[in-house]
Amino acid sequence: MPDNSTTATASGLAVTADPAAHPLNATGQQRNVLVFAACTGLQYLAAPVLYVGLTQSALLNRMDASRTVANLPETVFFVMTFTPVLLACLLPGVQYLKPTLVVCYLATGAALALVALALVLPVSYATRINAVILQGAISGAAMPTAIALLWEAIGRGASEKRRAAAVGLAFGAGPFLAFFGSLGSQFVLTGSMAGFRVEPLESPSNFALVFGLGVPAMLLAALAATRLVIPSDTESPQRVALWGGVRDFLSQPVLLWSTVVTILLYVGNTITANMNLYTKEVLSADPEQFAGYQNALRFAFKGLAGFLLGWWLTRSNPRAGIIATGLLFVAAQIWAMFATGHWYLLAFGIYGAGELIGVYAPNYILSASRPRDLRRNMAYVTMMMVPAGPAGALFGLIADSGLGGSQSSAFRLSFLACALILVAGLALAIVVLPPRPLPPD
Image (cartoon, rainbow, N blue to C red):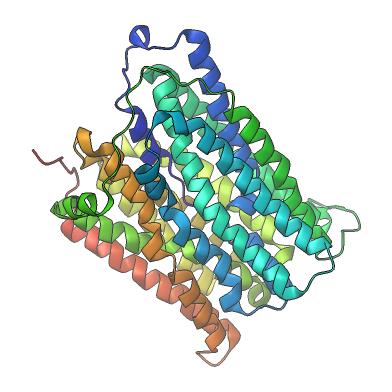
């Protein structure tokens, strides 16, 4: 699930920045800040199962699914990320914001519960595999929608100064909650962590517990979302005219080329399943034995890179953020191809830092957008994962193909294919994207 903090921030730009002029009093605004931080933190806490890829692929590998099938949950997750745009077309009114947000969290929790039940009930492997794939689809529809709505809520429900505090609280602590959640999932899956060991649950009961622990987090997020205070006198967004808006969007050269670049670089988000499955080849261990550590490194590096890249962005330009995160994505694939032993795990840390492309690519499009087009353009950004999503299935097919003469070679070829697509996106960004894009007159 790529980070979308900058994308969603656009929802708040139309709200009055003067705290004295805000329609909510200080108490209401402070409540919204706390709810925003709580919901974001709970999303991060459940990241081992909400960031569809590593845990799901390890589980499907345990059930002897092919590499192609093991990539399907991640693939359908990204294909379903068009949902925020669909809802912007169907339900643009402010009155739908809070109910839809609550439904998104409840649907996500229900999908996690479905997987947990399928893993403990005496059902066939096919039923369990379909439950995992369905969870990827539901999470792909519900979570990007929840993120967009949560940002709109804080944009409407807090002043600019208080929104800054909300962002600092949510995205300062959030990745580290994901770090601890990942270590917890590692302990549940293997029974060991940092030298401490207990007898683990047998598979698939251990996976059922990991998915089940995400359910109360989503229920708490749904409950917290009901406490949001949305001002009644804020203007409802315009209904998004999908196809006409797309034509207008793509008629602007900077937005057209930035869309192509973003889609190419978003392909990097779809390689995580193969990176996890390759654990068996490079470490001679089942992928589940390291899935928690891989997620922990992923989020620890993401938190650190978030601070460093944010500082650097203030001293560079919007295109620099795209290039930096794209290079990190490429570096992760190169490291995965050549690292041996436990050094391989560092690829997940580098990859996690590269996932911040989900912040800096939308930030570039934001910089190139007219104020009146912000809501529409940021909605379209969520659709850019849809054409990138099928790449996950392609990488799974490469891993299944046996190209190169061995299973290890086939995995490395999938990493090479991903890296080449990323390099193409980076080259295009350097050649055609201006460092500081300007909105059209």
